[in-house]
Length: 521
Image 1 (cartoon, rainbow, N blue to C red):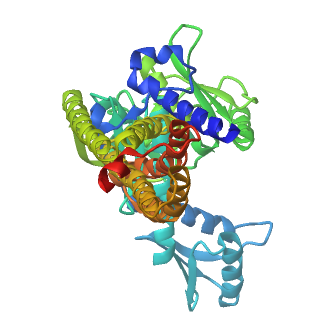
Image 2: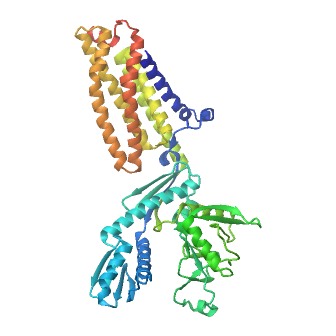
Image 3: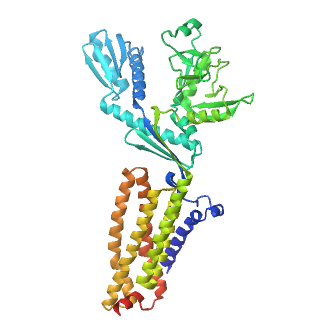
């Protein structure tokens, strides 16, 4: 008896989970973890962006870093300087000439120890060549795609957009779906910015004439100011502190009540920032974001705590957006919006309305069919079917799944399979009674002998749905999620709850089973 009550209470709990979805106005009366199911883009309306990851820029930056690492390794005084010349970076290939032929093997060994297996090193005479192999380039591109997906996710989550769908596609694309977003322009701006921040010292020796000529001295770059691109700031190419060392950033106000962005560095960044501000008091340093100078303040005093402040005439919203960008990290490769689509909320509402009508019509026909053919057992099967539907919706909401149009198709398919899972034991019961078995015994044997068939059919479908979820895209995943949840609830309701309700109906007595009597008569 305890087992039967546990099954009934589990079913009631599943139905209760669906109440916030069926009665949205009453969601406030339930705990926060009981919430309505989230609707996808095709049902709620919103924006969809297809982004392309550009690995070429990332590979170019990697090669530039490789160039610097090679140079540092060759002039490492702690290990002994190796004389070289003609260090070049041409089209993704770094090359140099070792002056003494006897130092070639030593140079290769040192570079190998510093760079590991990240690049291929080859030699021809005294010339060393370093380049990424096709396999290594592919690994870098795959890594850039995965990191980009995560960074885009963090940026969108920080904006408070509810239930976004962000996933990679085709090896170089990112599909972003934003239900409920009518104007994606601000989000596009945030997503599209690489947000690579670096700190450089300003070269105060450069004259206005040199800036006007556009010819920067060796080791110096002219970078435009963020607010006035026509004004160029001469900054040293050397990166003193990288934005990768940022641990946190928040929008705040300064003493003049102007919006600023506060930054907090990790241990490594804090040491470098403290060293920079200690050794260069009275000098200017430039805060550079994506190749543009946010501001170039003068270092008034050492800043040892790893905390800084960025000002640049921000609006409050601009400060918040910049804080989000810096906090989520820099994109490893630029993103280009190659497709944009907006789904109106009205279209989504029409889809929901049509889906409801279709489900109600189908459900009514199924209910009538089961009652006409199986009488009281059909009524029980209909109750179980409605409980099954409620449990699918409730568990989907509890798990945080997003309901889409393909998801509704998965629910409809599940309900069809649930009807079949009820019919199988009913037909076995009919056969048992025809062979002379008592009704109570026939019910037990009918369910026991149909369990294997029902389990086999549903479990094979569950395996297929899990494969679809693992390897499918967004719409296919939505279908697979509801189908998987539906199969589990179907096995519970049709094999356990249905049997319990029939036992309650029979009351331990050999009642006549109407649909069997009618057929035999």
